[in-house]
Image (cartoon, rainbow, N blue to C red; front, side, top):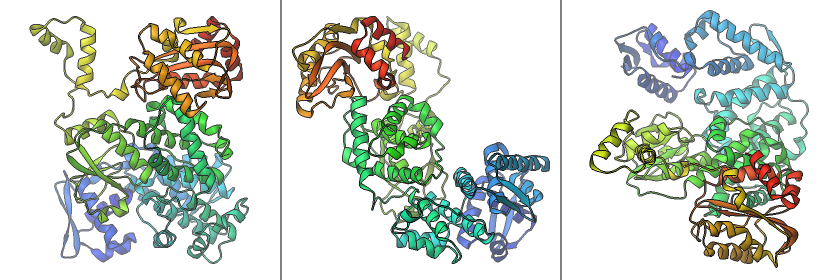
Length: 635
């Protein structure tokens, strides 16, 4: 339950028969917002009671009039408490300690300590905190606003109102901002207006002249007070450019070139041939554009799922990090933060996980308040993990009422008030999310974690002979828990590049022979067939030296269907350099992949090794034992 809703509940409980207009005046909200809040309150207290509108007055009917037992978001979430207090201190409208006790359902001592901790945060940023009937924060204005932007992103579910000026600006300029973008922009405008009134404004802005040319610059001028300086207008205008949007009009050419480079290098470094690249590039462009402006104009980035991304896509993250930070097209991305890379990784991960679609029966629509990029990632994951589901489309929260197609469920990353049943999941699906979706959309149901595998195997033994107890146990667990192909074990580089798969020779006739000799250990052990060797050679003939990853280092590979029996690697060092379609090469590492994921861990480790000049030289000139030692060290 949001803080305002908690106060409304307590107010109605303490004052029986509160008239509608009195509630609207007291909380300075619209009738629509009040009814939305009442609906959410009733959902939260469904086991306690209900608030009803009786002839224009609101009453609480229930078995318990003491609501301290009702779950309040602030009780268990320490970070949320702190952000809530920071938010109101920066705005200069912090409620009294008594009011905070009611809002947050915490003791006076806890509230007092919380305020003191917030003051320490300001001091650590060299910001001065004074109190004269209200808190005033002074110091580096950029630091104050960066802190505020970080706070509101952490508080996003607890921010309700969108400024009418922001809605009008968005529609008039065809910005197509996401729901969250509108909320954050409304909050920033509120802060800017308050700071201007106090005479605390942005004084210097390096990009002021550049931002003046943006199409929405003059519209920003119209929604700020007439006393706002050009710097203030430019600051707001720049912030709008950094927000997630569904519009990519006016993107600089370098962003298109960067995306082409990103996809090309990703394919090269992962040996993955991406399908539907045109659609992928259009969709990711929206995110890259806002990332570019956040970095260029030094706005903070907030990624609430960064930890999950690093855990789930650790090696994909590392590969993309190297590609992005070494871009020659957008050198600004050398300063890119992990939060931004995390979003891009999520998109690539969602794409790779979503290439295979199951049959669809039930109908659902995805509503993701943070825009298309996250919605599409969620859609791809759902298609991959949940058979029998028909996603009819994705939409923003503001456009949900405009959807004309029939659907049975809404899948969202946040709780919503809607006419249809809402299924709330994480942006990156957890095992619990998948189990929930399976139980709703299929006959599989939620796997029972208490199943006794030993008893199950004993039952199997009654009617058959078990030749490999351990293997049967593993396979049964996979079946019960619906482990997906993408979740299977990813071998390390040293597990694939064993000593018998590393060879060194003085010279070869040409690059074709080099690929054939490099692949021979895999032919000999049955990992690949000659068809795969021919396919690798044909790829170079058709596409040129795209397989060269670094100086003198090539990664020959082809499609998984072209004669691959199992995931494998082999390496050949040729001491006299080989001309590969105009590029000199000493080292040929053959990759035989079986899918788009199981080889990622090994290639990420390889990318780490190729990043250092001394390692590249060792691959060119070192002995087989030295190369093997390097590979062992890299894992």
